[in-house]
Length: 339
Image: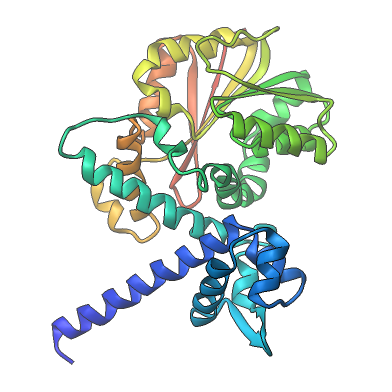
């Protein structure tokens, strides 16, 4: 086989992988996979059960069979093990890959057009596709929740120290509330407030807290960090992969972080760790950061090096220390307000 034939074969495999993930997205976004997990069904019955168009459901079932998500059972289709792996509630679900495949395609299309003008429209691009936005929070939770549970929550002393002091946690850019729910579930002495700019995220977070039995200790609000005034100084203020979204206003942001904290309180900032050495991006584990950083540029942002965050804390009189997790790709920067 010639070199170009080898390249063509490899590229075709990549293209079919993208197609497979796009099909999984359709199945996740419309509840098709979850419905078929309950029972095998003919396309017409599946369409009626989910109030979807029969023609679309039929064509999706055929394509999902072609890529191994479904197997025929007479006239019905049944979910395969591969299909079950994409169920949102499955252990170590593959759902984030499906969501990211479509979100990434959307952001790539926007970048291709905006590259001609230099326009950077901001976070509003995340809401341009109605089927994507409701899955943005669950995608991040499924991607980073296990790392948080396994390494970060037990490995960062600031959480236990804040719990020992008691008081409140303020989560700025709380998304669907998964981070704050995990913190207060682990440490019953803590209560919290989550703030987010998307109403859909706040709705999901509020429902999640109620469902997990911590709704009496949590409140979620729509708003932005510049106008939010905590009712009291907090023991811990968190920003979970959100700081780079407001980095252009970092002087103002870091003053607000300090002012929100009680003396001795801690700020816990979680950010992707942008490498100082660009050659690190060739690492298969790191190359995703490079593509995501293009998406961040569309939104008017860019990923940060931990040293930049530490320096910004120093500007407001707070000493910061960085811990790296996830093979060095995830940075937790902790800074304490002086007593």
